[in-house]
Image 1 (cartoon, rainbow, N blue to C red):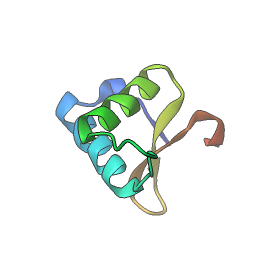
Image 2 (image 1 turned 60 degrees about the vertical axis):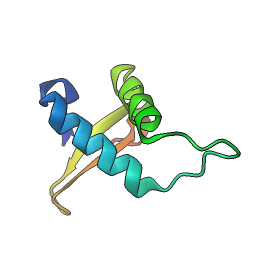
Image 3 (image 1 turned 120 degrees about the vertical axis):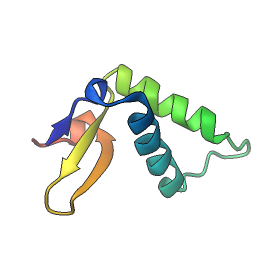
Length: 72
């Protein structure tokens, strides 16, 4: 189920994004990016509609995924 990110309290959204960024372990190449930069990138992608917040009833977790991968 898709979760409208606009409906979340800003602190809750920040916590979800930080949790996602910290667990991803993405390699950013030669220049490491700060947590704040990574969070800002994810927020921008949410605002642009490139990614979605998705609730998994099976796993009882929230995930962030590309819009084109969502099958709701």
